[in-house]
Length: 94
Image (tube, rainbow, N blue to C red; front, side, top):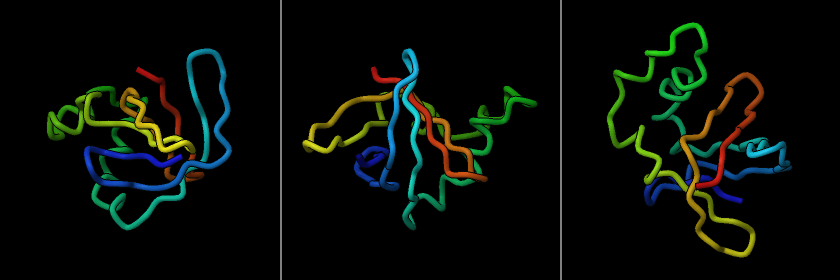
């Protein structure tokens, strides 16, 4: 699977698993992920739930995030959470 923001592929997702409504996996980021690095730190910052408010509204819009699955099908997702320390990614399908 591949993670996309609009028309930008940000990396490959490996080992996806399901737990209730959540999907989990490991992302192998590419060079385009670099500009989102601080944004994803803010997304998963549980100590400051308002940390993401300073970012572009387009980045916060679920309609701009999707996954291309192994059969090349484009599937919308909610704003993903990516944890830099272990490259864990989690999301929900829309």
